[in-house]
Image (cartoon, rainbow, N blue to C red; front, side):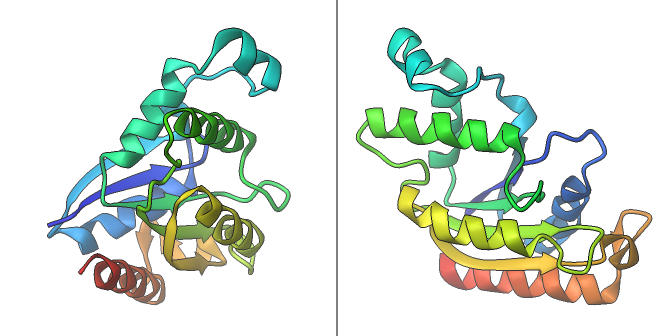
Length: 180
């Protein structure tokens, strides 16, 4: 049994990415799961000045610790104009710096599964590509990345259609293979 963190990078109270994570939970019944979101970490905007003057906020250190406590992370990330939401980018920036100060990396060789969705046809593919490219520089072992476009057609009353569930099952299969 592996420990897996389900992380929602959104700051929306009505996040479709939370629904995406909720839908994958039943497929991970043999693992120890925990959940967190960007909203759990209250941080000032990152700047070199703030880092120099105040050091690393406890929330940034807590984020790094949380990631390091798990064997794998499932990151569900919205796309805001082709990039991650500002709240997550800020958390990521603080986290990479806090980890580096401890002679570590943000992900510290943890397995990472990236999930994206959107109401549009592409399903967040631009942010997915960004995350697949940047996270390995910070210690992630990206095992797979999946996108579900046309969210509102692929989820009905918060439940995945058979087609969406098939994509989620493929994602779980890739993660479990990497954890084996």
